Image (cartoon, rainbow over all chains, first blue to last red; front, side, top):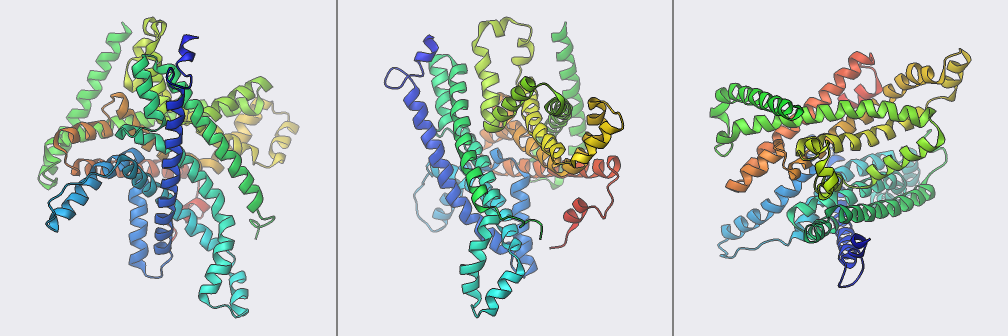
Length: 237
Length: 267
């Protein structure tokens, strides 16, 4: 029973620290989602270009990022970004050294991973919109941009959202990797708490339960969205 | 007894790794980048360690998943609920927390440290093997089970009308078809496990990532991670090729098959 007291909220227990860690995890996941979605959209745009070398470049990037462990990417971004920025600064004769906050290093790393997978989803969704619908829109006199903005992208969403929600679940679990570069999110908080109290088991269990809670909530939202955007008979034709 | 036995196997395997590394590294020494040359042996050792770990995990997890999806199809109600809870827990939490929970978390209890199991639970490699196997088994069970559920209901009805027992129906009729359908998803899962195996370096295992991290912590040279990335991509390619040839040989898939078309599709 005494171990459970250590999970209490307030100054005596670690409960509030764990909850704050969970909040940091969610914040990190959401900011990586935004960055990753932007990167994914750019990559998908490159993959849909008619020029072969441009497409090849985008596919090469996808291959590189999908073949290496997420952990390696996070570490390379964390250590490499500082070096890159400092090298750029010193090339322009600025004699300062900056270091990127861990939050942003994590966001960029996770965003890259998310973006590479999202680009495949977005590309497939873009191509899944029936050609006849677009031709009908063009026949009604809409120009290319109007078709893209008003018809193509809104219709694309229902194909993209289920895939993107799956990627969100993966992203939420991947945020735990940032614990290794000592950013204080949920897993790292649990580790520190466990080491301080010399009872790692209960803190890791509590953190695992919080992760389960987060994935359960995301799964509920995913199911609701899937129900809302599903098209009857759309996969048949 | 078991202790010394395991230790001698470990020494044997490490010696074997480094003899392969010697043979491989000496001829290509001249072409390697400056920062990787002195560590070539360690990279090859890590490469082989990761490969062995992933292959063992995948084999173990596949055998577990075959059994567990059978229980999910045929078993009693309480067993199904238990298995669903297991699959849900392992799919809903990150691999890293599972590894740390077993490696750092269990070590807190005295009765674990005094039990026979401590021989395995005190070693990062064994914990990595066990946890990754359980994790991959959960994912593979999910894949196999949903593939079986999506088969035509006529398949199992036909089998039972021929007089096959539920067990035989599962093993001879449902499972082979489900494997055929879900093989691409299983290959995908194999790649995911390869990438998750990099995390065992956080529990002191010197796999490819572990070696890369140790070398990096001394030199702070980013090319070390570049070399590791190249080797990981090579491992991904090897596992994809293995999945491809197993599908070709075991499932007699032809080049006209949907999966082959997707693999070789010109964009």
